[in-house]
Image 1 (spheres, helix red, strand yellow):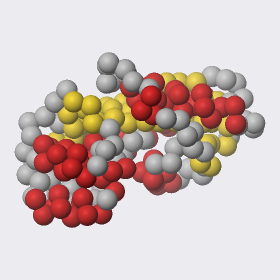
Image 2 (image 1 turned 135 degrees about the horizontal axis):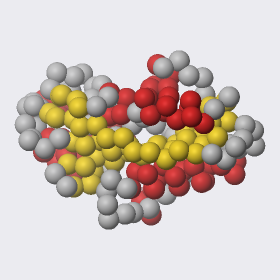
Image 3 (image 1 turned 120 degrees about the horizontal axis):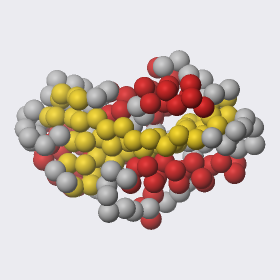
Image 4 (image 1 turned 180 degrees about the vertical axis):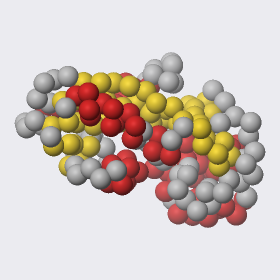
Length: 189
């Protein structure tokens, strides 16, 4: 069955490509900032569902639509994509040697457009940082990719590979928990 990824995230595309999936990409274009919830763990579920609801009317053939969103929660604070470089720097500096993990909370919705059946689920992985050298923060900020990442970091960047410990899966930290995707695809196919 055809697979459609309802996301413009390069990390999510990479996760599916590395797993050997062939897929099309559609972007929902929703304004994520208007969707809010007091429980930060619920927010990515609401966003994944809203993306699916925006895309489903545009899909006319049988397919499995995958939509997802991720937020990072650190010490009770919601951390989406940083608004600017100052906020990205604050995020990164706060992770350094912190006893609190950066919790990568994913909401994933997969919908079979032929049957109308869907699965909405949440997956959380935790990233613990040791000391983040100021030079590493400076290099990462210079690249500018921090502004497109929930929590302002990308564990695949060379500056972070030696200073992190992950509880969960790398794919979940990257925004698309592959084990969840594969299980839901099997259930809905």
